[in-house]
Length: 252
Image 1 (cartoon, rainbow, N blue to C red):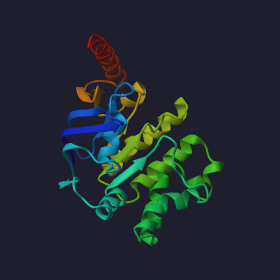
Image 2 (image 1 turned 180 degrees about the horizontal axis):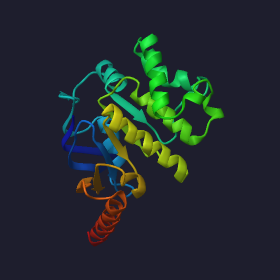
Image 3 (image 1 turned 30 degrees about the vertical axis):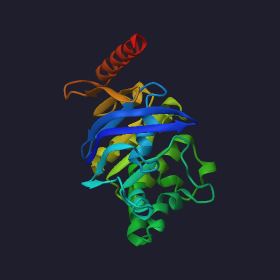
């Protein structure tokens, strides 16, 4: 589904070059819920921005649904962002002047496909995420958790290949965070959605099928949740690995 191979990205500030990604390799399968974790400066946001085609990368390949993303013109990249990628941001990025229903429908409007079928899909997603009662309200009238579930529904309306989520629970309390994670789990289990989430939160990551630990622009370790393992057991493994990664970074 999503393959990243030998990805390199360097920023130039004045005469100084900063190598942010140093040969990242990873893969995400269809219907998989994957998290990327790592300390500040590890390259998480840069990785997400490269996959989303918002910034170019220097070397390597990114393949989405069998299509390589390098070298595409802006028109084709825009089509991929709207049709093959769904986005969920920390600060929701809803349009205040549109109702919840209209925000969810927005990608269909952009694609010129806001028809009766799209309205039915909106209703279906709203029911899945428990937000049917707020469809005619505006973002300022609903809670943070409801805004983020609206954003998840909007990300899914075009049935994208992958949802890219950037710290989706970062601005939420624990109850609202769990509601958003439950929305992702429902998307995976009932819609076979694929989610690639950047997070600092070990609790949110512990619900994932796989967690990629990033340090200094490289994949330090990839951890998969075993079938027999509970979420709390997986979280304990994650916390232990994060501690070891921190020690390794200090030694370097």
